[in-house]
Image (cartoon, rainbow, N blue to C red; front, side, top):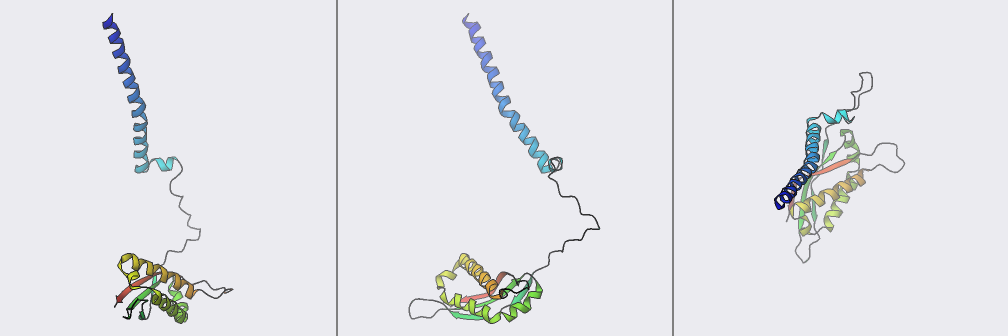
Length: 175
């Protein structure tokens, strides 16, 4: 009789293990199949998530993205905000990346304001702030923001605002 109950317990344990295996393996198998169908590109169109249908030939075509234009900035030499009696200078040669080549004329007209904003910012910087790639990146972000302020058209103007997208450093010497 003990042998019969031992067999019954072993039988239940074996079927319970199989149930657990099925409960775990079935969702994993379905997830693997779904991922395979998704990454092979079969599933998205079936779910209506595929690419939008191509526009017909009679519809007006969207304007192709233009390559950026570059505007040369004059060389800037400014003294930094350094403690002590010793003066520390920065020499900066840069280019502005602008969204449209047509904006170069507007940037040239705003050059005095642009140089003023750049120089006043550089004069307030400490030499430690320019060290390393993070210092250079912070300077770039600040100069882009200041450049966009400088080239903005006056309030109420109907002309589109020129947009400076980046400042590229050609030379930056701190001495």
